[in-house]
Image (cartoon, rainbow, N blue to C red; front, top):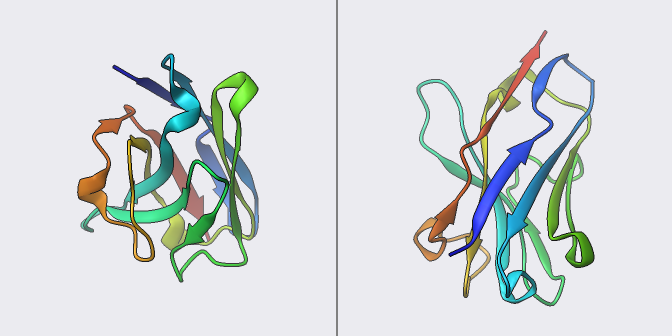
Length: 124
């Protein structure tokens, strides 16, 4: 089964940037739909961005124009570039994988494989 490990989280001031990475280990990694989810304090987990096996992407309205999801199949790595960060972006960010996925909107139940999460904290 696929193993996912996130990295790149940290603490930044509003307006700053971070780049999250998700390293995947699976013989058929390139066949998966990959996504980023987050859960802030007192909030439900929500889909942030998803990239399908053909490279098609979709974003939550709250991050459009600020975040960019991408992947490097040769390195089996998923990325989330986060610019113009806001305090509302503070959350635990999770990498997830699905054999098949539907969007928009992102359907969390489609994703059966999850990483351990990486913390992002944005101060005003």
